[in-house]
Image (tube, rainbow, N blue to C red):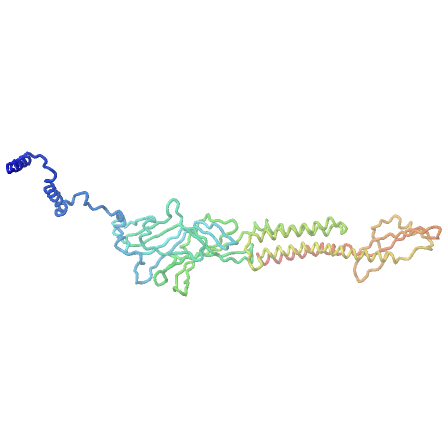
Length: 471
């Protein structure tokens, strides 16, 4: 038994010397020792393994690389959330404007649309840089977001936008001494309070107002860079309904009870409306309708189918013209000049219809009186020479006027018309068949005769007064 143990130990020693793998149960301790030895350089000798890809520091992708221009302007060295010279005197900011177009003027919405180049000039020492040739640097809108710029806005604007085709229409130019030029292209729709009491013979004055939103006059001083010369306009600007008479600038202080006083710049322009369009579309048609209504004064009063439709047609046409004009205008509470002209013309047309109604009514009354007069005429029975009267007037036309008849009554001049009264009597009863004529006065055309003169004269007088007041 002892001998077997010695032989087994000798066999194990020989296997270990020859490099063969020993049994698994006896390799647990040496293997654990080797792993510990390999792991030690990773923890203890970390400084010598710095180049290992497992422990190499990855770059910070959230931090953008600084461009050369930003390094030159030292953008990261300053806090541009505050204005230049914070805590000191107000920053002077000069402004000039180039008006590119004046697009639309709307009377209904009481506004106008304008496209302009708005330029700001100020000095920021934080943006000064060294330059051997004293040349400025120009940037686009990407740098504008990183520096301080004046917070301008348009007072009483309804909507506005900065053009962005093909890129944002923004330009920033920085000079070596820190002076800055900031320019942008803007289209703005702003309110314009119009007085339409003289429409369409009116002249309107509108203004575009520019102001700082946050900085009062203690922090920012707005001014026109070159006075009235700071406003330039394109010579090709034209409007279909208006003539641009004048562009000029003004400066005022605006007070808000909650925040204080602010500098406000005004772009004022005066517009005079072209009248020729409204002459063709409104005034001439209305005048022609009034003149057409006068035609009925020359038509016989008995031609009812001719005079009545003519009067109704002119009245309806005037109503259509008035409705069309008011449809394109705001519902203001005062009377416009065009309303006065159209409504006076409407009254003239309406009076021409009333004039025919008066003529027809008075003629009917006169015919009734004449009928009663004929009934009261004495009978011609027993006349010595009844045939003489019949022969004397046999050739006289029924409507022929003469000097026979009744005298004038109440000083009213009346048209004379012969009325034939035929009175026949039976020979058996002793009545002689004959014809008797008598003159009667009838008010048929007196009103028409006066209207032919009064209506045109009154309308011409109205036109003289109207155009002398509003022109």
